[in-house]
Length: 621
Image 1 (cartoon, rainbow, N blue to C red):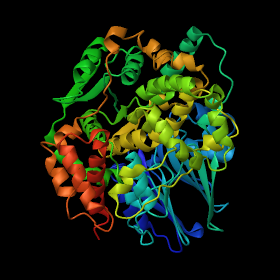
Image 2 (cartoon, rainbow, N blue to C red):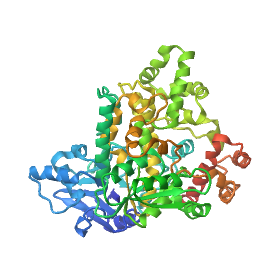
Image 3 (cartoon, rainbow, N blue to C red):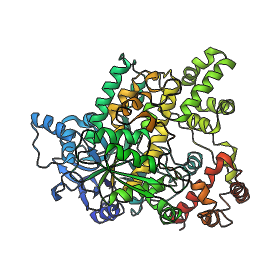
Image 4 (cartoon, helix red, strand yellow):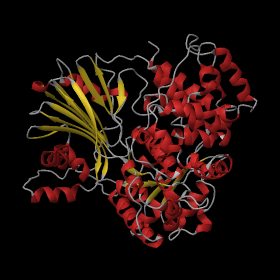
């Protein structure tokens, strides 16, 4: 993995490009380079983490004819594409997937991405057409920010790479702030700064250098597959086909010229990936896990499974002292306020792995793809109850009605109180999080009114309809929670220590196949991730696996009341910006938090701490 940077302005320079690239040295410590394309008023820059074709000739920016590229990610099937392009007359000088992308673009144009199995964010400068084209992978594994200001356009893998440019201005976006306190992260396309946007997954952006205009196009949409007719396979046939795709996806992610390992918790996802890989290998996989001295600790389960599968296993127990060393750096690594506290153990497991490997597989997205969240069980139960208290045609046509409404968010906000009474708080929040407003608690935090933006999810505007409620919940999580929380967490954590993270379960072939499965193959009478679990249980006994999953979660609220209490006191006090925050209300929140009476809103304390730490580092001047 790497970091990519580029900008277009009146007088670009290599020196500024290199300065921007050096801000991403943690993403690419092996080489930083920049090239000027004067006639296009463009500078491209790159920070390289060498994984495939380690030679200096594979450094970037890379050129071919009138095309130039900076690329972050991996194209796992680049060898097959290379052979196809050779048959079409292309000649190659390197063993690099970057070179293959350039030739693929020359041959197929923007549709080249439809040939790729991989994770990627890349920019291609077409010098002849005077265009810059940005691409982001189907799941949003790799990040890509862009910024427009008057006649200047710039992009980067991380926000910090934009800071050296003299035309970049740090102006807080209050919509981004409101979204952060609602979700604990800032969803695409929003960001913490005005003028900065995140390119959505499955899209590409064309920027015309001549007219200084840009347009975004979709090349892949998960909804296309959820709305196709369901596959007419028996359950056993579907299970066999899925296992074949899973094996292919996992094996592709082992393609590397450097050592590879796997993050292993006690859950089905990471165990499944580890089992599928180890079963086909004689050499022992290197696996890594993080545990905790109290609370949710999967380290013993992971160790037991590692022994069963025969991996070379390493574990580390996280303590409050580890947190003290990492928390001050979180704003730097994440660039925006980010309140998923499991970022801390994810950074720790990345550090642990980096001592032995340069690439690590992380088994994220199983819950989104195969319907594994507990909230889906609650959704099923509550919808059954709803059928008994409302007309059946209301429920069956609910989302059809919503899709026909000009402003679906207005409709859903009006219905939010009704939904809130039906769902447990945490389940209601996850299922309806894309719809309802910020709530009185969030507004009480601020001394001024901050209104949440309500961008309509694409499937609410789509003429097609997903009829299964659990599938709707999956799409919401896939489009929002997965790319904006889970994948951000893993990308920044792994990159903070120059470790490439790979996501085998986010192979688009798995996503497309699972979306077309009958819902009961994934979820049946409370049996979550049914088909995936049945595959994993071929390798690891059910009695070992069927234990509560905690992943790399940590007892942050307990520690904030004890060893890490100083974080609360140092950040949530009278020194907070009184023109922005309601200090009296926050003081009351602290008292309730220490007394253990804040309930589900304990997360607000951590969100406030992270925001304050970020603000001090980024906006103090």
